[in-house]
Length: 270
Image (tube, rainbow, N blue to C red; front, top):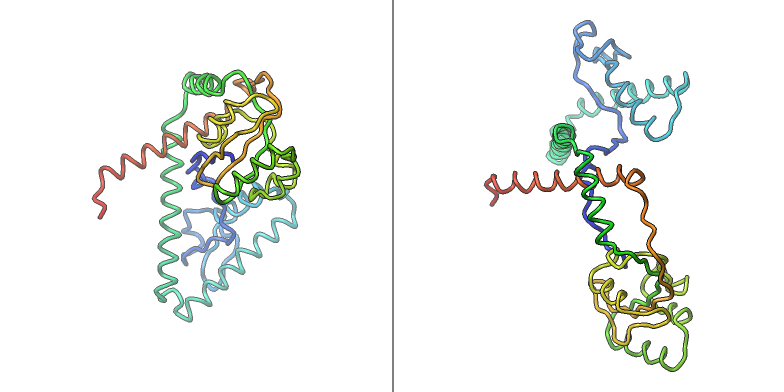
């Protein structure tokens, strides 16, 4: 099972809201957010609201067109109509609604803070290249094509190893595996470096030679594995330029994580 390194808290930045934003009533001529797109019962929907919604749907693949513009304006108007209707019923005073509004505001503030933090702490090319070199060195010069069977308890794993010793094939026994991503493919995991797996799995894989399997079950947080190594080949690492955007994101995420830890240390948390 491949590990899932904690990367982007920058999901905070990229989060897309599905609902149109609502704005408080104000005179159209006094709006600091641009000319009105529409006015609903005296409540101004400014151009900035339209621009924000348009940017979100375009990021999801929508193309500019008169139909899109009309659709977005309609969505903003509908959202404001529903917002006003909800206020007339005092729904904004319900505790659960008030809590959700507070949480939405909190997330927007957090997202904005993270975005500004990332912008004010750019990752240099030198730092990105150093991280690239570290990752390549850590990966080693080889990659491995393997397969495995994952089971819940050690006894079952030992039974499968005995069946392998009796001549049964890993590909057939893989149907017993709990791993849905590989059980129907003969347990195949494809090409990867040992460091791409959780530590006990990766270490065990690195000790094998092609055509052999682990003689004892390998325990991880997922259960017990029987691992077979099929092939080994020289690792052809992608170039720095190919991976630079992902490496920058990785370093940004690490920087954000570290900053959050610093904020937590300075805070009084009970």
